[in-house]
Amino acid sequence: MFQSQQDQIASEDVLRRFDAAVDDSLILWASTDPIGRAYNGFQAVAYSALLQLQFRICDQFSAKPQLPDVENQDEKISDICNPPDLRIAFKSQSHVLTFNAYPVLRPSFLLLTTSPTYRQTSPLDHSDFKAAWTAIQQLEKGGDGDQYMMIYNCGRESGCSRSHKHMQLFPRPTETTLFPDRLLHETLQIPYTYYLTFHDPERFGQDIPSTQLSAYLAALQHARKILGLSEGEYVPHNVVLVRQWILVIPRRKAGVQKISTNAAGMVGLVWVGSRKEMEEWERYGPIEALREMGVAAPNEVISP
Image (tube, rainbow, N blue to C red; front, side, top):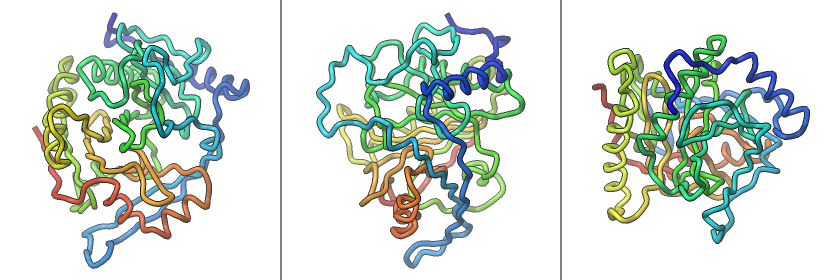
């Protein structure tokens, strides 16, 4: 059953439960300070504006499960722990909303498909967008002004760490501006291919998940072509969704040398397990790293 527009997820209750789960060690979380960096250009190419990255050093990442080198897991069994104590009341036949047990930001959530047979190599479908959009609306309505974002990491190359199909939701950081928002008033050149569609929720109303799905599927076809993949192959990519836009990023690899990232890192929110890992990013060159993990090619910005 799909929740109505009047339903909301109360921020006060969510934070109380989140903090209690942290105290009980059901959630591994500690407050982190953002470390801002700005980079201008790579190699001989001069970029028109600074690329902003926000690093956070997260000690809990050392305990976070990762995909095995060889995936032989029973697809009938979820590889994501979501005990009842971490679940949030959410009326959906297709998805379960639960706290993320290894979050960076407070609070953070996972939207899991109710069946673990849906895998992280599957593209998003209408039920995914419907669930994500509902959760974003309810979290924002029940909150104290926070805006939320959803990310999806499709395939090992995208930086995913689990096989059970899931999306992540967390508050949009207020200390930095994501580059799609900057594009509204700045000229930027991002070092990798992306497909960005702006949309107006007030204009599309209840049909916004269908609008998001259409934009996503069109971007996915472009991504398939630029990666040189056939129709039968899955397309490694990241998705970032907020109230005002949807962003799709084709991925060639999860990392280079000793650094890696997922959708959050590709838009400038780089979460690392240690200061040494952050130093590896700066040694390699963040702009070059992002270019190699994505696809260096022209970008497409769409305003319907």
